[in-house]
Amino acid sequence: MSHVPAPRDRFSAWCGWVLAGVAALAPLIAWLGPLAFAPVMAVAGLLTLPAARITDEERPAALALLVILIWASGSMIWSPYHPGELEEATALKLVLMAGLFWALASAAARAAPGSRIWSLRIFAWGMAGLGVVLLVEGLTGAGLYQALRSAMHDPIRHDLAAKNVAVGAFVLTIFWAPAALAGARVGGAGWLALPMVAGLVVSSLVFGADAPLAALVIGLVAALAVWRWPTAAPRLLAAVAAVFFLLMPLLLAVLISGGHYEALEKAAPLSWAQRMGYWRHAVTWIADHPLRGWGLDASRMFAPGIQLHPHDAALQMWLELGVIGAMAATVFWVVVFLRMSRPKPDAAMAASAASAVAFLVFAAVSFGVWQEWWIAVGGFSAALCTALSRQPALGRSAPRDAIGARASTIGPFSE
Image (cartoon, rainbow, N blue to C red):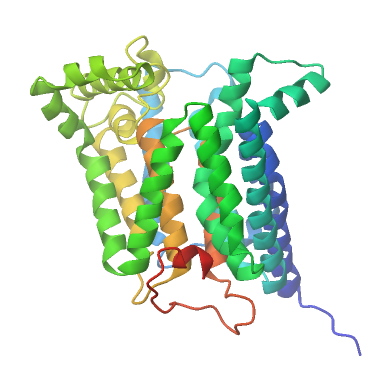
């Protein structure tokens, strides 16, 4: 008699294959159109919606997100920004993204071993391929991207092509560590980290994107710290995240009042000087409404002092949602890092730390809090890291909670 899979087994396999589908699309999206991450992740969340659940460990982070959603939606009452069209309704999109992206992360935890292995294998090779593409783009000055646009009868200026391609380096910085570990665990190909890092570094240097380089280094340091001190390092990262979200306006205010900030702003390169100008204006306006904030998307109304958003997640939370939003964001990120704490070294947690810290670095200097495609990138990273944490190296019978300590500094990514 042939074995008929139970419905639960079929759905678990389905969860893994949906994850694999997103993994297959991820490198192309990162290269050609990062904005597509949001709709692709939304569809994947819909396809795996029955998997959505909140565990006891996840409940504090889920409650923090719920507070942000409720407070952000309510703050629209006093926000000076009023969306004119449905697609501009940030609160509605946040609610949908929270539910759908959480569902995909839950699906990654539930994925059957066979489809999970394929999703991680596709992810690893896909990110290696993205690294190769970015390497070629860096060496040719975005030649591939421009050639493709020309073939599509949609030519683009070189400077705009370079700017678009550089975004792929930001995405790869978030994904490279879990992808490298996935290659080592399910494909025996730890060397896939090399094209990823090479493409990231070369494209960032050629296109003048310094944030990915900073995030790469800081993320790698965080990963090695979590590997070396698996209990203490996540707690330290949680404390740093708390200081960032709770005290950033105060720290900047002290620096500004000391008279040194203006000199630093004038001496900084243009892009950094612009950011520092946004931060200076944000601190001033935060002081007007520190408790309730100015309201969701209010940052859009502060031009020319601030263009779209302050380019700093902590300042944007304080500016728009006040102390309640800042505290909720603090709780969320503290829980994220504390959940990485382990009694023994765990490579999956080290890779997760690299991804999470890189995301926070970009949040501190680059992207807006509510940018859908960027939230989707973070959601997909969370899903892949969840799958990776449940995947032992092939040939082992069960997932490992810990990996024996090694002296090699590349241990977390080569296994």
